[in-house]
Image (tube, rainbow, N blue to C red; front, side, top):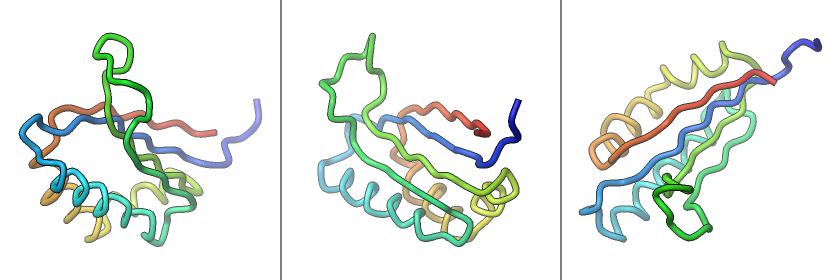
Length: 104
């Protein structure tokens, strides 16, 4: 088995039903800023382009970041910008979410 070279952090999520289209755009614009944090190697976020289907496609949005290793992700998690965006912008309107982390 080869050694893991990278760490990937994936969050799939929905926003609360009462979140307006304008708020959704603002939240996603703030989330996109996470890609500029120092330990992030690659970052992508956006809305699912597949039609909504709660049984087969339960999440409408995603964010995914790649890091050199888990230490890089830990630094990202503790960064002031991440803390602000997640706690002050995203969590207040997050309906539900799933987190998935892998080394690859």
